[in-house]
Image 1 (cartoon, one colour):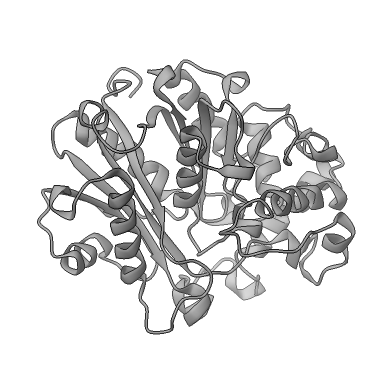
Image 2: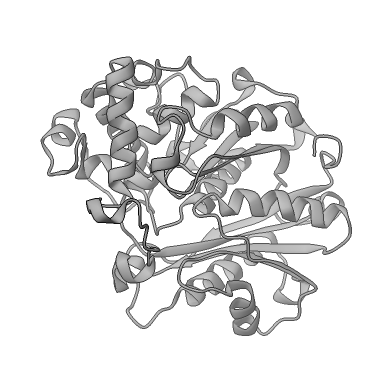
Length: 385
């Protein structure tokens, strides 16, 4: 792939969220997808009639691209319904990049929608029966991530206080984001004292349960230069698949990001020191710690110490999850689209009080399943092409 995808051949030109939080009960995931699509097209100045490719994934619709096409009333010549959990949308960016470069489509839209808060998380994300794990009655997915957190604590001396620092940093970023669900300050002590869900994770170590959706518009690099907003270019991409069920994860402290990150860096010709802003899938406080290690921002086992002392909070050395993350901004079940949206806005300089000054490069890392599918995208502004 390193030799196949050309830098500058495709660009992200429009991004938008749908309504977030808790939407009206009569709304559907496709309603939210469509709302995001229309807003993202408005963001870049394109029309529905320009769209000739759809990419989508949601746990509430098996054939989401077909459903969305019908809902929008458009003709398309390319689609991709790849569903690998919350990392699906990073994969969609790479697939759309390839399709645009090959001339299979010209304007691709990537969309997501979920009403998990309104209809209940169980109804929105039905789970397959796992004959090897279900008899032990785990509370999934929290139990799976709690296992990883407990192992990291045992193996490297990571503390609950260090996990809590991730949640506190996310809340500090969220307080700078008008669209964030959480509006109150949070302390380490409050995280530690919150209701335990699955040890060592309290409810404040766990992501939000919200409704929401959004969309991303991509087109050719040439066409992108004539549109409303500065284009943002995919520079590198990598994938890392390791397992389906947590019982088959070879090492609970090493994720597929250890493969996806190096692949993305190699394609982009960049390294961790070249990244200005980092947007990670923070379904639980342990995940940014694992990903920061596996993506090369700190050595393995040092993640807990790395996130301490406000290093990833506003004003810290490394801006991480600048929208407030899934822990404090929103988390409608499959969060990977929202970190892409935030990265694009950071690179366009649109984030107001939470803007990272001079941001030219962003790393976006999506996670699916129970640490199962890991996808890394590196994005850049005009100076990187």
